[in-house]
Length: 336
Image (cartoon, rainbow, N blue to C red):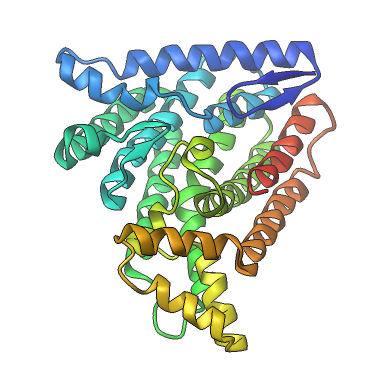
């Protein structure tokens, strides 16, 4: 058994492992090439998060999905570069919105160079992704545009919050389907499509990707509360500090409204207070880590991961499918 990539996927088939490793290495080269500029400062800023590493979750999915067609097809690697560049660009923007100090274990771009440079660097990455995308054909451009619209819509819905009468948990899951699920779905879709896989396989992998993407973000929600910065590479409780209600917080509020327990209501009041205060923020993290709402959020993560696994049912058995199934398990493992 070997391990592929920073995400920690174990692959038992040597040929599949070789294909994935070669593909991911080519993606890494493509990312560095795509983030070069004639202006050295732009290169430094654009490569800041590329060189910080990361799980390369989306490129890994492209490579695995491509196994259902021709994994050596010339458009597979560029499509993975497009998806990862798009993802990286959103991280620059997210860190500005969240006022995050750390990303992938290094100072965030906004912390290092300020908000304006971080936003513009994200825009630069979007531009480079579009440049590569243009060579992949009009259908790829349309798919990426639709996904990007969903991604931005999800971010807007998160910012605006649920409308009156809308269940906050349902609203949040809609946000994640757009904000995270859409791009993970594109990774799977591009891998299958660019490899020439059958249209039925493309559709199955697209559904799998969206469900896995939601599970992946739910696991991140749990990690944001449960882990320290060494484990996650990010400052714990960033969303908490900014008042962004992730699933553990939503499950807490749901429980407080349903049961009316004094300790739940008191914790909700603490979360509604000024969590820019370090002492309050630390107390909120400690109390949430011990609260049943965190376990509720873990169960939700498992549910979406199992949905992703179920979506794979129609695919032919083999090492590529087994690896996609294992990714569902790894996502659940991240959530504890």
